[in-house]
Structure formats: structure tokens, C-alpha cells
Amino acid sequence: MGTVKTTAPWIAWTLAAAALAAEPILFVDKAQGEAALRMIRAGDTVRFHCLPCSDVAYSPVEVRSRELRPHGGRWRLLLNGDAVEVSAVYVDSGYGEGWENLALLLGFVDDSIARELKPSLAEASRLAPHTGRWAGTLGEAPVELELLVRERGLVGSYTAAGTAAGTAAGGETFRLLATAFGGPRGAETLALIERDDDDRVTATLRGVLDAAGTFEGTRTPLDGSPARAFALRRAK
Figure 1 (cartoon, one colour):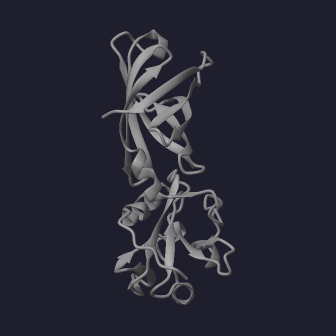
Figure 2 (tube, helix red, strand yellow; figure 1 turned 45 degrees about the vertical axis):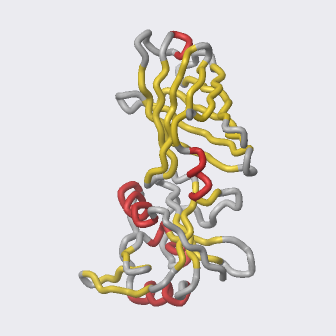
């Protein structure tokens, strides 16, 4: 297997998985742990991805060391010296056939876990070029948007003013969480959900990020009001 070095916050990925999964899989029995060590060897690459955490990309990690450590009669799997949430780990199935979830391979049952990573899923590093500030219009109203990479993937916020944006005249700030990202480089599709200050989902935004540094698409409110186009460019 090839190796990929990464600086992605994969440990934070596992913490997010533990916090959000219905039943975090933090411990294994000894037989499961020994099976995991047979599947993952030093020099291999694993991929971290947490579906319940709304991750929109995977984080590749080169395994330099792996071990089992006893914990209160059970065992924890450590990769590179850090305990991991096994349901967020995907291993190479071999023969170029994809990446399979470690927890499911070890016999755990959890419907919230994806058995295999989708071939279209992007590597986390592909999110980085799209972070930063964007400015443009939503409908006819000016809008400013900021995107950041956090533990759960791509998050952001935007402030829009004017009734054309469906906000009060003084403007309002919404939080964003990416739910889909992928496609060919230079024409990647990004989908986000929008939440207000009361944490209510108010709209979805979907558009295309192109190589020229534009992000164009449509904001669709969930209250049935008309959808509006947005057009943004990276702010300098």
C-alpha cells in the first residue's frame, strides 16, 4: 500500500465521531484488537471519515506505529500513539477495490456507519484552497461569506443585508456546514446547510467552485419562499 503524509486534524476527527455517533465505538475486546493489528501494519495508510459527524472529506494518515492498550478490562486501539474511534477508521480492502470500515470488519453493527468510502469522496486537503473570505451578491443584496476547515470538515458563516436576502434590513449572520463536496478539480460542487442564531436549519446553499475563484449557485429557503441565486468571488 502507498503512504500519505498528512497534517489534517485526524485526532479531532475521532473526537468528533465519539461525540456525535449514537454509540461511540471506543473500545474493543482483545480478539477484535488483535484482528485490527493484523489489518493495519506500520507503513500502511488509513483514512479517517466520520459520517455521523457530517464529514465531507476523508483524512489520510500514514501509520507509523500501532498498538493495543488495556483499559478497564477492555482494549483501545492506538495509531501513532493516539487512541482512535474505530468506526471512523477505513482500511484499504486490497486489490484497488476501495476502503472498508474497520469497526464493521471487526463485527460491530451500526447503521450510522458507511461500510465503504464513496469513490467520489474528496481528500481533506482539497478543501483548503476554498477557505477564506468571499464577497458578492445573494439575489440583489450584498453578502460576505467566510469558509474555514474545522474538525468536522468545511464550516462557515455569512452576513447578508436587505430583504432580497430574506433578512432584516440591518443584516443577519448565518452559520454554514458543508454536507457535500466533490467533483473534478476546478469545478467542484459544494452544498451547505444554513442555520440561524437559534440553531434552526433555514436554507440550503448549493453551487460550483471554479478555478477562476468564483462560487455561484442557489440558496433555497426551507420555508417555501423563492430560491435566490448567489454569485461570490474570493475576497483579496
